[in-house]
Amino acid sequence: MSSPSSPPSAPQALPAVADYLSFTVGEEVYAIDILAVREIRAFDSATRIAGAPAFIRGVINLRGVIVPVVDLRLRFGLAAAECTAFTVLIVVESGRRLAAVVVDAVNDVLALGEDDIRPAPDFPSTIGARFIRGLATVDERMLVVLDIVGLMGAPETGLGEQTEEQP
Image 1 (cartoon, rainbow, N blue to C red):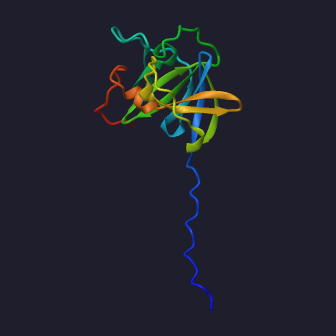
Image 2: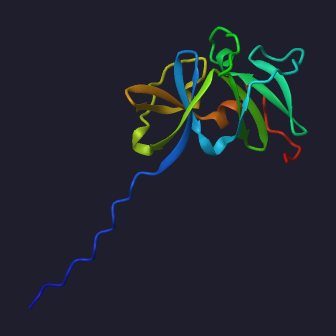
Image 3: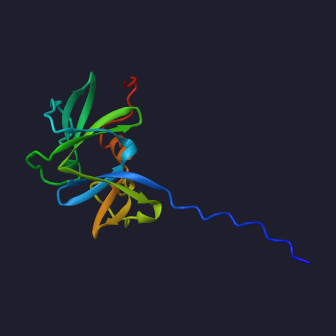
C-alpha cells in the first residue's frame, strides 16, 4: 500500500528583476528605476528662474510643458562642471510632475534583482539617506540606487506635486 503523497511544494519564487538606468555624476555611478524615466535628451540650456535654489538650473519647454531642470552635481553637493557632449538631461516622472535632471553621462540599462541591491549604510549625506534605495555591484563597480521619484518630490527640492494635468 502506498502512503499518501504530500502535496507538491510551491515553486521557489525568483527574485523580482527590474531595469535600471545607470548614469555618472562626478566620479560615482548611480541608477534609477527605468519606469520613472520619460526620456533622455541632449543637454539644453535652461531659462533661469530668479530666487530658485542653486541646484535648479532653470526650466525648459518640453513640448508645451514647463519642466524644472535639476543639476544633480549641485544637488549632491559636488562642484559645478562644464557641460560636455556627454552631458544629458534625463526627464523623469515624479507623481504627476516632470523634472529633468542633468547628469554627466548615461551609461547603460541594467537588470537588477532585489537580491542584487544591498541596504545602504545609514549616515548623513547631501542626498539624504531616505533617497538611497541601496547599493549594487556591477562588473566590480559599486553603484548607488536612487529613489528618484522621492528625491524630486522632496520638500527641500521644492518641486512639490503639480496640480495641472501633464500631456
